[in-house]
Length: 546
Image (tube, rainbow, N blue to C red):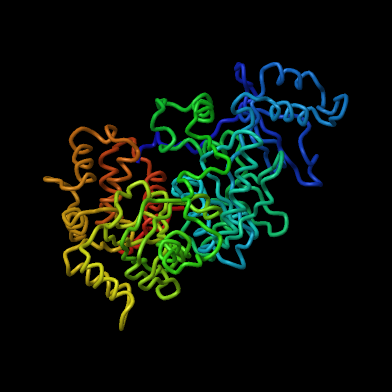
């Protein structure tokens, strides 16, 4: 993809921009290499201090605040309750009611890497980022810490101490509801986060960037052999995470990179998460009760809202697809303290098997159906509809309506003699429904599937496109690749990868010409495959060139 999409180099400067407001950070050091925290704040554009291992949130100082600290020789000449000028300035920013004076980078960590393994951690991260934060997981940057953690750098900030506290509570809620083991202890006042490239003192391994589908051996090999070093500036750290196409679509992209381009992104509303206090997107229904009703006649309605919900996405990591066949019994709702107000739909289950098969089933019973944020956005079914939902790790399910007799038969295939998900899918396919090859397909039609499942040896060019992705590909070939947005290029890449890595690679290389960037293209292709692994099992990913 285009070499202007994401820059990976940095040029440090000792010249402080002549701006009215300056983004600054505080660096931290090991015990034997300097002070625990630097006494002064430093702009994100200046060189990373020697031996620095951590950095604080971004504090937006006024010119007067910055000049005040610069008049001090060491930063320790502070009167009153503070020992460091940095602490005084940080507290002033925290107390300022104006927006975005303190920008906390959204970092997610788990330190049970060796106990649980990378695949489980990635599954937790994926669920939290997409379902709880509403951020596409493929836009995140992943790191191995060098010892026992995986770090996720999310391309978002949280503005202000109150919002940061709500974020911490959200992470705790996620852990309680899902059983995940995120490290919520890192979300403290004035936190310091480990810089990429820093060598771990106990293992000698560096914090290195990894891919979401890497296994333990590949991760350790990267940490052992990588020549990654600490970025020359903190601006380079932020640029690696933030300055990418999904965040820059609505921003005029400069032909050459300047620090102002990054600052414009940091100052953009689209990069700041906002958490509303204790108010789900969907109101909790009045029928919710604490106990099972005394009158048996009320039990069906109670169960539709209060029984254990069925998740089409649970236990998806390393397993197949879930299949559920339901009759919708009402509109979407939320339950108190259930997955941060996730959308639930009251339903009667003809039958359901989760991603791990019999470990999560529903058989002729009333219960809520859980919907991911992606699935809820496209949900258009009403009370009385008979619906099939085929879900999986992508949380972007294949959903379609069926006739009542088909729902009964498909439900029996999931619950009767020799029941299995494959039996239900084969039955639905025989009835003419597009069940796809994985659970990510959304509401695709039979014609769309026919187009994307062509023989891999056929040239992926389009003459008479059927799908929206095919039409976008034709537009790029006729009018130029730059007429497509990043998301539209992503759709085309999803389509082309059906023919394999090499045809997709050569198509983008031809369209971009001299502006083709192999590293960006590789990153985007791998993100697609990681997001929809079942769709691209036939795609061989070539080794990364050294």
